[in-house]
Image 1 (cartoon, helix red, strand yellow):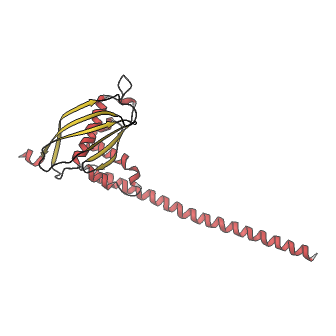
Image 2 (image 1 turned 180 degrees about the vertical axis):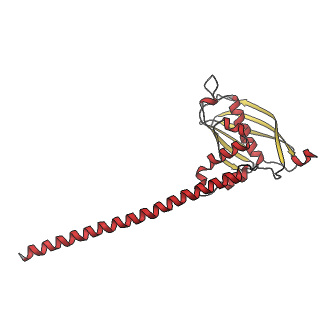
Length: 218
């Protein structure tokens, strides 16, 4: 009888200990979830406010490389291509006519991606030549603007020669890589457009003129 009572007390003690452990685990999880939730909400709000601030302060900037570098911040960097595309649309409104994103950008080097959309296609179910020209011009323009040292320098496109190698379909990549010499007033560059199989779709030869706005006014 005494042994049965002892076993009953042991079972009861183990049950109470198990309940206490479960309750403690619940409290710990609730506390951890509260901390995690607050941290997550705080990070989202901070990112949103930082993004709004950057968009407002950079929306009229004429230095795209500065914009790109300022968007290289934690969390904001994830959305950098979309935010940059929005800001690029303010600087070059016609770039909104194609669905493009900049993927890599540094001084004299620029790479962009363009998606194959129905609105950019020709009757032969491939990407229209004007969309390719706009894509190449935009990437080349960004590459050149990143090399300008004087904010009053302006560039004008005076020639664009587009050589087609194959029909453009699917996701396209355009890239340019060049160096700007200090005394250059006319700049010639190539922008190579490739498809998803890395086949060259088109090569654009662009000729730009660099003019200083101060000198033009004189």
